Image (cartoon, rainbow, N blue to C red; front, side, top):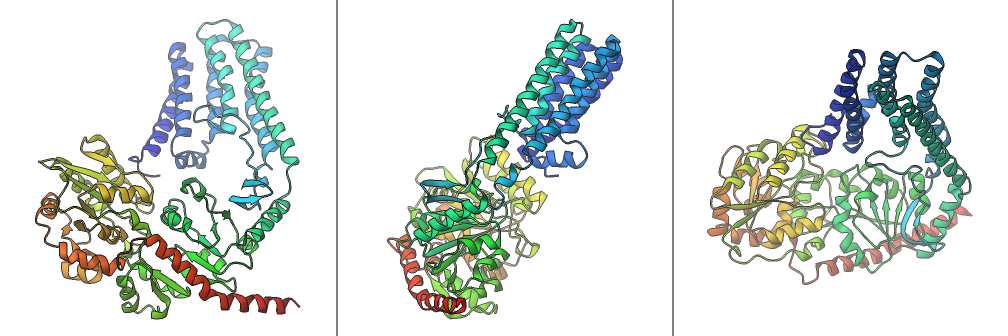
Length: 597
């Protein structure tokens, strides 16, 4: 289970604990005949259930793996209510039969509902989703069916149906507390009516689903629209949950490309975090679908990441494959041998070229092209001194990486103490905190450190939490006076501001080794773990700033020559790549035609 410092996990865990304690209390007072306490306990059961549903879904999944899914929890609370009623009233057998049948109607309706709606998920199976593309007059598809049941707070889907037992459960406990049998009758009737309404909603959805076009028909319409649009540039993106930012950082620049662009996304979950864009987009969940949406018009494919699924696009003939990356810093992943597979590797400046060519990973000089960093167009140059007496520090650490060898993060080992020192400093220092979106994905101690730092910053009048998204980071660049960061592309990007920075050294590497292996760190002082010097280094950076000239040289080295319109430069390079791709593209089309004869 994830760290309880995560608010969503904590909410669900508190709900699960409340639910378990309330069930125990309700069962105990049923035997002891304490109806008032029993009513409070049953209300706590429902509150606990709602908190589980409102919190992190991984906690609900953890309970389900231990036979405590919503259905089992509902049957348990119903059983406790029936037990209390039987012990308190000793009702005649016919009444017991009717009550038990009513209670059993809940899991029976749940089963019927699942049978009715089991095929609804298959409606989306095999259908290629799209946005911002005219498909027979529709700008988004495939058709999204509305929810079958209305949400009740955090309760959604089948959990709403299971919550229908609340009427009969309260009726049972009402009788135990001394109310008349009419309360039980009304509760049972309301529960049965609610169950019938849920089943009727499932029937209506099933009838609507039967009249939808097939997946093949939907995809054929999309294919026709793509051929009419005739994209020349494909932006191909794949990655796990939490990596959508790697595509988001490119959207503004891609909007300026003069060629017809199509964004191909491999996982549906990216749609939730994708920034607003007018670019046509398709979601292809299989290699077959990637090939299906590929048209003869495509000249160039741009790749912001290196993932295995890139192979599904790279294998298609006639396309010039260009790696544009999502960041350009000193991390080892920025010169991966996997990059050799691309026709071209676009980098920000000479630093990346030197990195590739000196690491011995087989990248050729002719693959490298310096295009600058269009994302930094909105980063402003700093004034000579802070605009106010109060210093503003941006702490923007990286995440722990997929492997220990590429773990440069300071969050788990240094983050809490570092931020605590800054928040306690006198004269006051204002602290902006911008964690990497993937922090805590691999290491629980990193997740815990991020949660603790977030809480400290949220509670402090000196603290500001920076929102998600690349524009929020670059706005924070413009707001702060000093950056505190780990080895990452954040340091390289911050060079565009020419402001001072401090680089963490959580591994305790020798300073000479650090600056040799990670040249960007030579533009700021290194902060060792447990040194307690962050406040001192920050104040020195905004007063004497001894490394200012060094950063000026590093900025050109890492980011290329300054440009009045870096986004325009990128658009020009895309045009040029399309021209370079023409010969291979035409040859592949001709070969394909001859092979089809």
